Image (cartoon, rainbow, N blue to C red; front, side, top):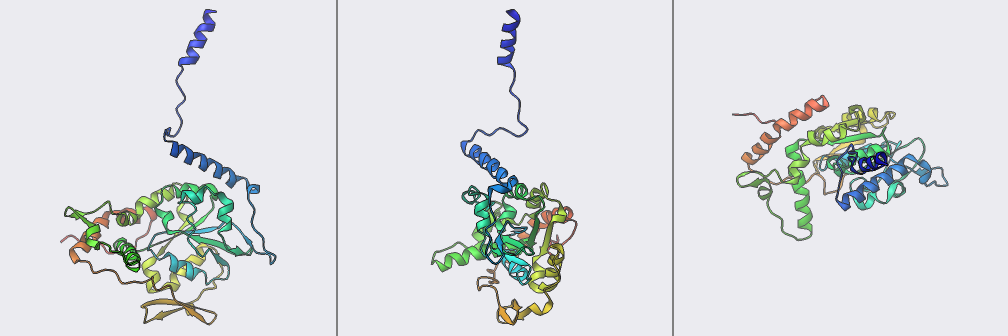
Length: 320
């Protein structure tokens, strides 16, 4: 009896097993973890969803390639140029499946339903620029497809900040709503405002580290957004090789539109340019403020170059 009582006492007081990840007490986060598990089940059990099949043999299927960002890096231009290839089927709209909880909870069948109809020989592509800077997205994409081929288009971080502001500024202007000057966002108490989200989005090495936890570097092709604007064909050739596509896009598919000031596309005799919202002029920024931005990004850029094993011709700060 004494042994039985001692055993009972030890059973009651034995310490709980500590989980490999920190326990989360928040009900919201617990619910989120539950959603993650459910989606992972659907990802591993292919019979839980269906690929919608058309009578002509095409079907809606999960993407094999995702353009993950970066916002204002040139993702729309990249998608339009890549769509010149006959073996590419691209989703028209930004899906926001992996970064918007309301969409993510809908599961993979909902995701498939957002995809274009494509033939077996085609690669389905979707783009959502916010994926690159969303902390949860890399793991979610990995859980769906560990072999995913990812496209990331980047441009000079300082220029990207200005472009980020410009988009929001024009959105407000179209709605006849006032919007503060860029200086009011960039400067706080006489110093660079590091809480400004546009600055955080340009810290490429931080976001890239998150993606490299799940995908090897050879599964992520980085497109030079600044070069894509100036001379698109060589950059698109590299994308074709990365996706193992036959070389179908050529230099004649691009022509420089002097009125718009950037390259437009020519496909089977039909010419088209990006929406007028693309390529807008940035606001005038004082030289000292631009220099402050470039100085701030100098070290993060160096870390990014080391991380990916290549350099980019971005403005660098030179101390006087």
